[in-house]
Length: 453
Image 1 (cartoon, rainbow, N blue to C red):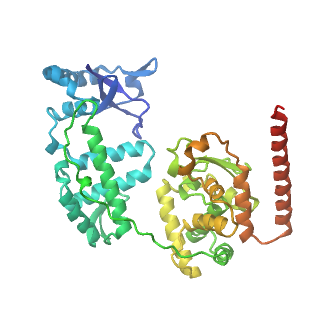
Image 2: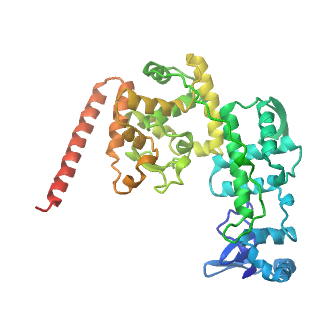
Image 3: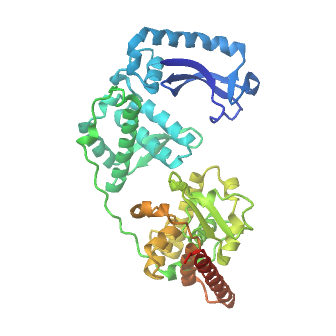
């Protein structure tokens, strides 16, 4: 049974003017999909009823009532054929005003909607990748209407050649004004990632319109069965040395400059076990007095453990941490803006110190490589410190409680490589060593006391 009703999704992101979109909910077998309307309402036009928000403005109700009546008539006209639709395809059927035809499914429009869904889910990186794919498809077809039937194996081969060639395209800048940009042709790795993201988009379209459980199959072709993605080629990164790290740390830079900020955050990332730029950006104000930084890694927070990690704020990192913790959000509107600033700063630092291809990500690579190859920490311990998911031990991980002191040990070993052997540092090292011994001793004692003979 299908039902139609107008709703205010109060939990959805509202516009900057404080209004919410009036949407039409399409429910089939207790699952719902939503149709966006051109109507927006403020707080005074709705009222709360239990956990729901109800539209109370009679003017908006009168505007939307004919649309609801038309949708209900269309469902009635379907009769028994309503059963071949799920909530998503029925919503599309109503919105399009009739039968969903495969040649009318617009990849560009669906892609734009998918970008919005990703943005609302906080998956900004995936949204940026999808924007690139949608823009490139528009460039290739020279149209904002691309039927899903056009995505075929032969088209993918031709599209691949198009992506490999240098080209000039029009894009909107941050002020929404069109500018002309030059793009280099994609190499193997860039092409692999682009076509992978196009496949993700195509799969999302198939999942939206087809329903295997109900036997609904609007899209019958799958071009990625015949077309094979280009193999990834391992790009050899330049080997990094402790002497280079010390040169980065010790160089004199203009106070308050972009290059100084990039260097500082590079060091801070290294000291915090290779923390990513997006996570540095999201550090909350008021955490500078804490002894540990506890957060969920943004890149992989869809894991079951939400990618939670607890990293000690080492004394050598404290000055930088106090300087930048909670300040970057006030300086940059998004973490993407910070990433651009870091990229420019690291390029300048690379030229100044004559360190080829120096990137912000090298802080993470240095930490991981030196922890394993020089400090001889186990891969499992390095993976824990860098908040990696161990795919080979997923079942075992269920039964093991996280011991964050392992991270403390890995971190202190790596920092010892690059830190001068000052008396202050040696005193700190002895203090940490004693604390760890006492902690391990108390853990063993508790285990012994818990045994029954």
